[in-house]
Image (tube, rainbow, N blue to C red; front, top):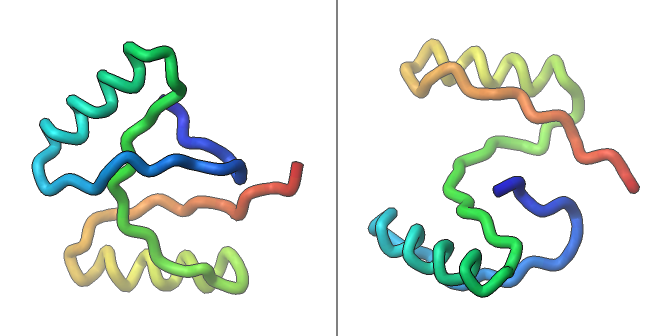
Length: 76
C-alpha cells in the first residue's frame, strides 16, 4: 500500500468512517488495482529543514504529537 509518487491518482471517495474507506480499498485491490488509503494532515511546505523542524517542535510542545519530517520528493 505504498503511496503513489508524482503520477496521476484516481480518488474514489472521502469517508468519515474508516470501515467505508477499507471496503472500497478492498474492492479496488480485489480488482487488481494498485490502491492505498490516505488520511493525513501535513504542514508546509517550508523553505528548509530547519523551518520545518521548528514548526514540528512548536506543535509537539502544544500537544499535537511528535510529527514526522518528510523530505521533498526528488525529481525522477
